[in-house]
Amino acid sequence: MQENLEQMDKDYVLHTYARNYTHFIKGENAKLYDEKGEDYIDFASGIAVCSVGHGNKRLANAICDQANKLIHTSNLYLIEHQAKLAKKLVELSGYDMRVFFANSGAEANEGALKIARKYGEVNGEIKRYQIITLESSFHGRTISTLKATAQSKMHNFFGPFPDGFVYAKDLQDVKNKVSNITCAVLLELVQGEGGITPFPKEEIQELANFLKEKDILLMIDEVQTGIYRSGELFASQVYGITPDVITTAKGLAGGVPIGAVLTRLKDIFAPSDHGSTFGGNFLSTRAGLEVLSILEEEKQSGALQSKIAYFSQKLQELKKEFGEIFTEEIGLGLMRGLRVKDLESLNKFLELSHKNRVLVLKSGKNTARFLPPLTITQEEMDEGFQRLKKALLEM
Ligand SMILES: Cc1ncc(COP(=O)(O)O)c(C=O)c1O
Image (cartoon, rainbow, N blue to C red; front, side, top):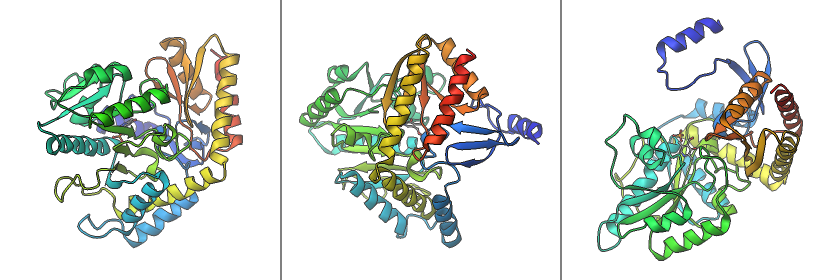
């Protein structure tokens, strides 16, 4: 069956991914099983999506129950779980905000960009439309979010792009790039595709104050850092800042497509300014509620913090033992990275990790990225690190 499927995929699906043809057919928490029954330790969570692991019974039951009752009505009518999920996001974050629901990270960021543009248009004497983003950022694959992504290699072929994006080298450079037509700054607190190094807390706080004084919106892309990956619901809380806009997606509904924009500008949009057919429907928001309820318990019980400490300690041990390959252990919460001395070694490490049945990701040119499910057990971590060690001994 595998060969047929593989060929079918090659013949009929557009080749946008450098796809590995391992064929997973089921999962249990941080373990995935392929067609031959081989188990893999998942240190990637479908790129930070499977926050409550695979085959989570509570999530599966909530989704099944909801699917049997009502999947979708449209946003023209009241959606119980959408209202409840918005309330929960606001209460758990402590941010006095309102929420718009979309279907993905890029779409959430599109919403944020529209908030920025409208804010710049209706506040101030002149129309302000410039949005500053950071080098090595990643904000999505739509035309606008691609332009917001300050990596020129991704801009080949797809222009012309919307106008009004300015790129800063680093946080300090953001200040240099601010002009009288700047309406917002959009950034990730830990760049998922840009090397996993958390920005320094004091520098972020200082920038937040600077932007506030200038009436420029601070918009934090928490598509990857959000939903307890940092140890808190949002990494913004770890940084002690109150952004004007937060976007999130990935882990929010544990694999059911969802995105969300939270903003303290509660009345920025009027009816028909923005919208989405699927965004915030019964199925995805019910899933989101169950995920938050599971993760809230993980956080309250102290389990999440212990997992973060243990995972980081294991990575540090690996770094120490294989100091000729790894140069640094970095990250925030369960979004962690090992800096590898060069790209060749990184690629070899990823290849051998897969061969030894551990899923690890890449970030930038020299970082191995680890995004395990937030429900991972100590046993699963131990097993994963044992296999990684074996992979490293083969290098
Ligand atoms: C920080 C960040 N922003 C935006 C996106 C885009 O999200 P999506 O692929 O759901 O559109 C991603 C995806 O990796 C991301 O990591």
